[in-house]
Image (cartoon, rainbow, N blue to C red; front, side, top):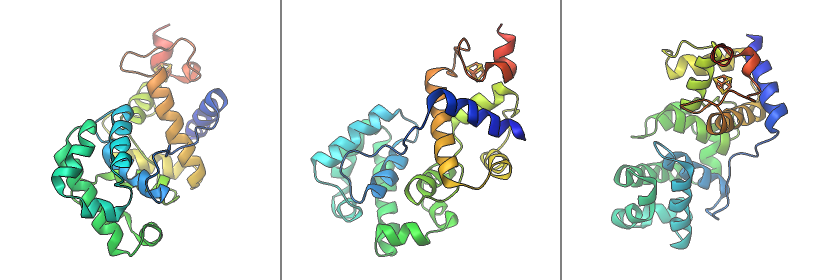
Length: 218
Ligand code: SF4
């Protein structure tokens, strides 16, 4: 499906490199900050995640060891701005436990399997793939609500596909390249936030000529 590569080129030409994943709160190592962000961003906006990350940094809860040491109630208070704070605090503790079972974040990222990540309660495919792609640098395509919405409007999805089917579509049609997958997902998020919102603003969208929805709205 040449459309996937063409869509990428159009987005990249418009927006350029996105430099994902953003890490600037000093959690250590930076890959751990990616893991924490990937858990916290479930069902909330990135601004709320940033408030929770700032709380963690302010409390010097910087590492997986720190997350295991802090009492659950303390961790819940720190991540509260990201919503679902009880569940997210528990997920962070479970993830920290898994990381430390490998001895270090580096070893965890080198050796953990997708299946092992998915076995952590509350870690779904999107979170697992974010960790594998953005922290471990592995070529796993991340699918999210922005992907589903934009590619349905483009006419490349029906909207009824499962997460796995969409992921498979991208991974089968694109070179299996972590840098490409990194950039593509980040560009889709940019498109989804700026133009392909719930109420899309198709005027000026770089994909409009090839978009079923965009062409229909004139
Ligand atoms: S043309 Fe409109 S509907 Fe199509 S991708 Fe762009 S913003 Fe979304």
